[in-house]
Length: 531
Image (cartoon, rainbow, N blue to C red; front, side, top):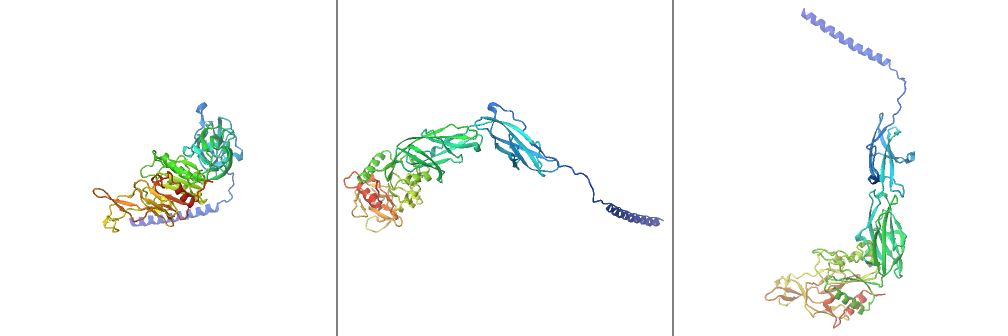
């Protein structure tokens, strides 16, 4: 009985499933046959986007007004699409050509202030744009009560002319504006209270002035922009030569507000000779007497006219070079390079190889390319083997002390060296390469010096035999040095002579000057001439 019921139930269930499947199939066919591909109706119109600002109102007046540089942010939404960007405008500039498109939702603006006005109420407007290019018809706006702030300008102290300058000088400045750098309209210069303000782009901050002819009492200077010496096509025609000059500078912003004027004073000295003498002997107790010795020697050699610049300021710190003298333009290139080029010959004397001679190579690039010649008298001193002077002066190094010693002066180096230093005994004579030149007597025993090893292609002009000292008891032994004996050398190009003993330590006969030496070296070898 139970078996029959079970079979009957199973059969009914199977028939029910089959009818369900057939029913679903018929229903699907019916629905498909009823499909209507020509449904009609009205599509919904595109709705415009809406725009919001993060601030809706600014309540400030008087001195509490905002500066013209403001930061604004906004956003937008679209009920049936998405935002592709925004357009903004100021005040009533809402014609189609006055809107500015942006993808940003914030920005910093310099709001416009009418020329000559200190304040303004500026309307900032913004509207969203959706993916169908539909603009928010209302948009959002806010009124910013702003005030203009005058710009500020000042000279850069290290970029001003020296107190006494020659015909090339420079000046640099820094300008700022609380309303933003783009609010600065121009920089203006005026010289010697002429009443003529020279306008310069606010993008410039450095000018070199080159006076091509300083022979008259007043002269014209041409202006050049930047460190790359770009012709500004500007000039001033009333610089005072051998006289005082005044420079005034101010900045003007887009609203016409002017900065406080900054002022600088300087003296322009006339160039009188083809020879520039650079006095860099910085030993306080002897610098004036050394200057007198050199100038007297030049005059006695027939070079009676020369321009002299004293560059003895500044101290050498241990292991360092002295800072470039403030008596020279401190911007080496282009200003100092262009100035030095004005002369044909340089005569430099200094108390140390770590002083301003350090800058001589860089500042004479155009001078040497133009055929300029240099005489340098600086007592030798210790230099690092990588010092740039070895690439400029015609020497490869100063001679080192020997590794072994000849204690008996018999030509046999029989002991390891513990030599302490070189020396030149008093009354030894330095001999010139030309037999007609005067010999130079060593006036006092010199130590702490060394002979030079000339660079390739260089020629020795003066030689003197050195000694070196070996410690011994009860006194040190002085041993003759058989190596280099060079104290003066000229380079292969015949345009640089270096003399490595202090002029105050050598003498020609009973003379109180070294005129014959200057005549032989500066005039005879380098062609020096005052005119």
